[in-house]
Length: 92
Image (cartoon, rainbow, N blue to C red):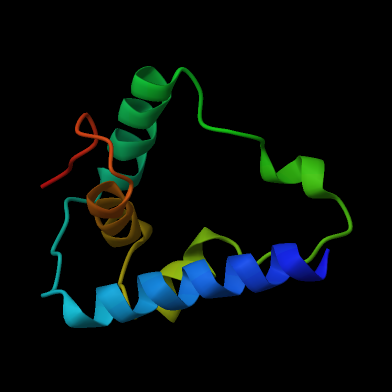
């Protein structure tokens, strides 16, 4: 469990550094849905729903977006589309 948390923290910190170094995204307000849909098609799924992690604390999408100083979760979606290494995900 400790290794999982350390890995999660490391990934979050790396993404934070990249986000702060990147120019403002200014993504459309639909980017979260667009990128999620594109990823689901490209990868044949998007993973496990957060409700399956009952009892484990989560920040939530809105709080994660604010952590990166984004105004909207769509900005987070646009950032993740640039970091995921999947050519099929993009949002302007």
